[in-house]
Length: 483
Image 1 (cartoon, helix red, strand yellow):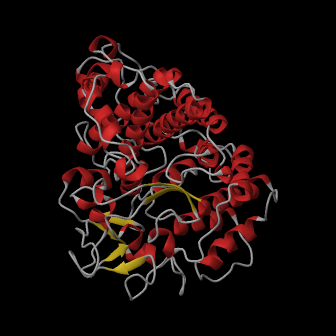
Image 2 (tube, helix red, strand yellow; image 1 turned 180 degrees about the vertical axis):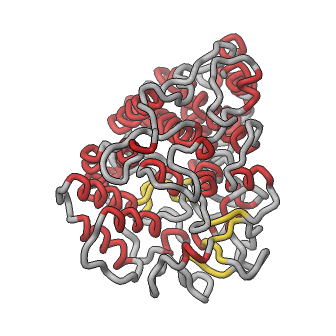
């Protein structure tokens, strides 16, 4: 796997470090400098700091959280009751129809670019000892572990079968094998700086081993990142971002007690608070509800090109415009009750679903991704309420609040009618309503054993292919079933 993939990483290292030195200057006040080789660039505290900023910048790439790590789980998780792809890009249509081949462009570039970012995180970790200021070194190392852990997590969820869960709404009975024997993804834990290093072939670690590494990275990040209550840069990771991501990972595993502990800690102690309006979460930058979001501006956002969330979702002649490629289906919009601001409204901007009046007019669109310069929320507090509600329900506990109280907190904010009681099915339905179009659909349905259209949770069509170029080079990477 690593000969082509991480050989590209080694060859593009100078570019990556240039990106670290220049791309984020408007966000984190990094002074632009010349491109330099790895040994020189990472030999000083300033160089290491610039490299970690470069890793942040890469999270905004369209192959990463700028588009694909948010969009692909919703397209692959789509069915006649959710959304569809109307655009002209064949690669996204293949994802939506579950008819991918091993040369699918989105699988290729998502795999390749995110492994390059992982390699940059590894470079930072190896160079971090040159940073003599203890607090600064701890921050940088924590950020690198956070980035590596979250990327491993999202890649294994796209390119491998799901982690087996137990209990109601489980995929255990759906034929999902033990995660210890299920092929996951390669775990690249050391930096590759030369073609010789990059030519070392790695196999696919098991799904269980990948999750173990993800948790190790995020736990290390949690121990090293600063407390936001003591004053931190909102644009950089803090310890509650790591805890929120751990809550998400534990929920995906079915480790409900651990997910509950992390989610409740974030709700109680992070200092974050729900916005008064759910709409404002997607129209204001760095709001009180968002724990971490990808910073966007006119220079760095993917949405200004033919490759961004707003580009694909928006159809609004009075706003950004957009291509109107992703259509929200009427059956999904009908799941929202009257008055729910997360549902549809006649006036654009009055709710989070609207009828487009721009390109491909007359179809429902998501207002969450409406302008190219808006930030992209990756972790927000409402998800923690949903995790706490589900975990409490499954464990028959009331840590922090009852499941009903947590669900009604979100429904009240959205102006939806309050519920008199909840079931596991209604809690999962609330996740669908609250987190729609944010990249959760595929992963939620897989972990709970729910079918997506005609496809069961363990269907090979719901797993992306290992890029064919990796297979052609004779690397020790078995291809996913069906490709």
